[in-house]
Image (cartoon, rainbow, N blue to C red):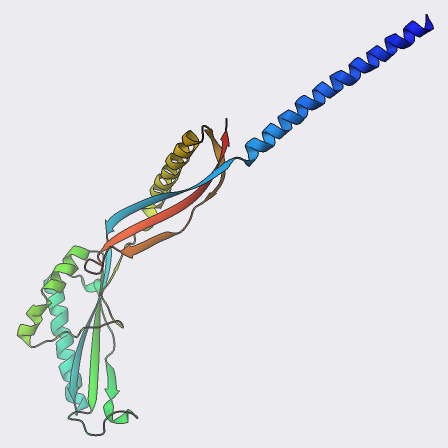
Length: 239
């Protein structure tokens, strides 16, 4: 009788151990599957790009006077400045959009490395700056600035120091929409990858907003801007 009880207890213990091993095996399999699924990821980039017209223009208008008599040069530069302001106001530029800087005077005789013999001593530069949100109007005036030549006024090219500059100020308003488009484009790429790998797209693991950039579309149309954003998104995959 005692022997039968020992056999029965041994069977119970063996059955318990077997069941424990089965449960342990299932748990390990589930853990491995979960670990594998967590490790299955795809990282994609989404691009959103738009062309927009600039909504702000800064136009420096420079004129020069050369001569030897400062008082007469100041009189000429003041008359030129008044004529340019009148031209701008007449063509629709607002008074508050015009600013006049103090004239810059260069004494060429004081230049250490300049030529000693010159036909004139002083070089006076005057700068009038137009800052306006009416880009189309200002562009039309820029195209007609040759009319000032009929008054004997020559506008000097500002070059790299004083270029005409166009900006897109309303960028912040379109930023959320562009972010949505970039993420949607990233998701399309990830879905295609998941389909090709016989998987399903799961949730977003990480997302990087990326950097927005605003550049001229090309050298000939600086008033048309290209707004661009690239976002990087990592998705998890599942079977």
